Length: 262
Image (cartoon, rainbow, N blue to C red; front, side):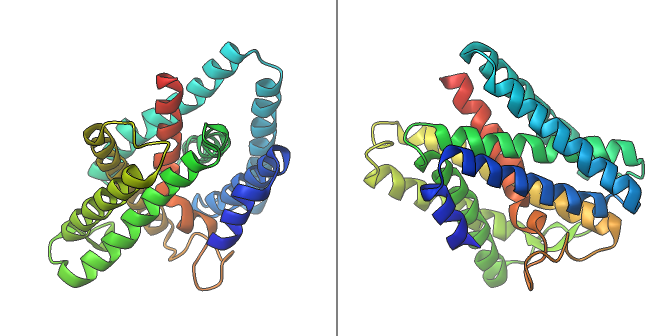
């Protein structure tokens, strides 16, 4: 899957990349419907409404001025920021079991639609597509480093009621891993070497925190739904949401930060 994503990231023209992102969002919507306990009829309705919402936003984006486009994207990312910085932490701390299907449907939109927009915006950012690859790479490095550090040194559980396998030692490993990753990119990339190292490291550590929140949130939703995987799209690896859980909480805020800076 990673090889296919990288090939698409570098090879596809903008329209084909947008079509791929729409397909990914719709697959995520189908899996979210299952996790939300929607009946077949309600799931089909939710899928159709999500497609209309996404296409409507893309249509509005295509016909907007540059200023209008920025405001539209910031509005989409603001919904994501509210979700990941306020609602989800409270959700996890309180251990909410949300059964209201309308609320779950709205949450799914706040998870998936901004992620799709972020994958479009970050791919277009100069230098394209390296910014998107850099942010996704940071999340992947954090995940891999957390896994190995947790297996080797993990003793103190991070959130045992949500995801018993995650430990604070894994989080420390993720922080160390992304620090090395950022240092290497900063040292060798002609696009980032002119930036100050400390702000980049601080931002990377914040993104690790966001990735952990995204991972824990999907685990909590799956536990609520009493399922192990979000779907069976990838045999042996679960569904799409299982693979992009940490990206849903990091990419939109990275795109938002990019727009605000630019």
